[in-house]
Length: 555
Image 1 (cartoon, rainbow, N blue to C red):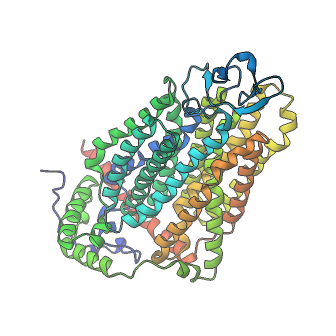
Image 2 (cartoon, rainbow, N blue to C red):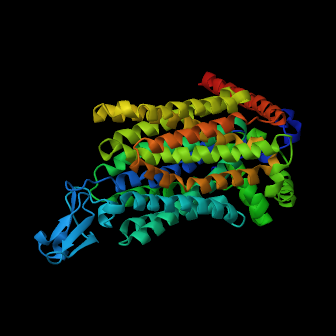
Image 3 (cartoon, helix red, strand yellow):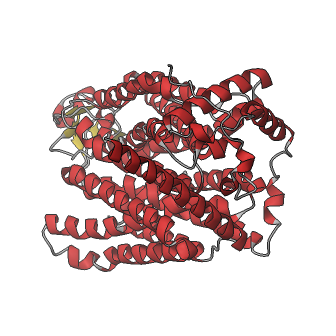
């Protein structure tokens, strides 16, 4: 018997009153359940796309470390004639060339001699004199690619299935990633960084769509929180990928070829069943969704939930999805319940502030110096994992007041992070190791709080609006936040004024985001709907436990 074979027709779903708890319930949700082995296998495959997304976001920390003038690089004055005819500035960026007794010309150094064991991006393109600007410019194009990729992927999923968008993003990431690491021109490097980010965004957007389609209730929110947590796992693995290489090109090749292993798992990547029923050709969609449902029901051991009229119900569901009203327009999002306008404003402000802090604190690792970057990025990644775990706990256990808990944590974490500015004078008198440790403690606490807020917003912000407006609302909030995220790479340049200034700015933004989150309230209708879903989930888990106990007794 093959994997998708599963006898159905034992009982009609209409007779199972425990399953008919919400208006959103349909045959797919009733048969597949909230979560099972089939969903677990599917979401784990999707989670893997977060690893290369983290690597491409944070690789600049290892590909462009700071190098020190005089010790590790010096201006090559041979192009200006004899050495005694020129004088080099302390930063090795300007040369005073003598053309006679009273004729001097200041020129910018064009060639450098390097004495550093790692061939960095800065050395490759001779960017030492404008290092901060060019590194921020390179990172800007990555963030711009994430913004463009999210918009294009959302529009593309009107004609291509989320699975195909995911696969196209994976293959284009492999091609563009390799090109990013082998080009000989800095402009081309930035261009391919942008295209690589577009590819990552394709995978992230389509993967999130599939997760939202095949899971429901608390399980869906938990999966989205864990989806964000895999970004931190990618950060934990990045130092290992960059530890034993001698060139920035090797890092790009490594972080590009390792995701190629995801290709082996693509046969088990599912389609989005509701997308097929709505957008695909009806006959083809019916057969694909039928096979998907039978396979999932068998793996989840829910064949007894298959109704005798499964085919008819799938056809009716497809017809309902194809004839449903189009997505709400942006202006319609501002109307609805009495807090609709406030929720729109607060959610847009909250995610923008939190996302800038979330990525900015990661990129700010370069401010602490290259000698401690491995330890610092590991601590930052662990802090992010802790923050995601706290968000998961709040989502599952403190659902009624989760926005207030999340906002308070974000405000507290941001406030603790701002202490680094107050400690700046004290830290200046301490040894370098203790000074870095003090700043790292402030950064880790604030990073955990921001990660908690960011995970909570990504997982639960759609519940603030009715189901018919959720797609447009989520797209609007995420797109708005990614527009403002473009500023994160340039805020790092503030470290030229003071090392702790960027961290202070990000912590202030975290406080602003926390204040906005505290103003969010889940509508009562949504809370009642979720209570019914939780009762249904509890009944489902009790049934699984009963079957497992019966199986153990028979053994």
